[in-house]
Image (cartoon, rainbow, N blue to C red; front, top):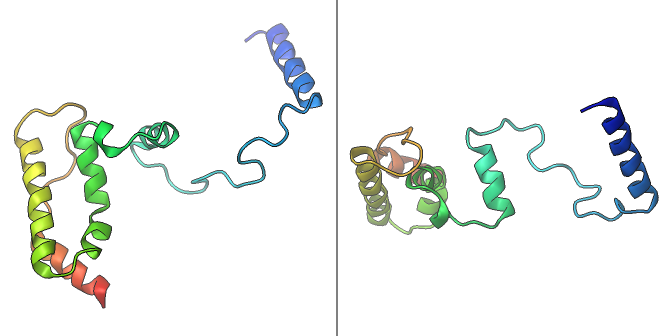
Length: 128
């Protein structure tokens, strides 16, 4: 950007500010969400999905599975017994296995299957 363009942009911003166009904007006076936290690898996708209110169904399979894996503790915590926990892990593992074996749209999976015994142990520990 040239100096002339930069001065024009600065002048336009100052004029808009003088007219009050920046007053009462959404989020004014609130901290920026996520400030000070490390960015995840897919931070841009998460921001876009949040902004456009896109659900998990719109994500490529690999990213959808990653989100489900990330939310697994909360999902399992809502279940009442060990059999249900194992069934949920088995169901997710079946979809992960399918994505690992066959071609999937989007990025490749960066994780493997979930150990059901570990998931049950963690579920029990969180219930205490």
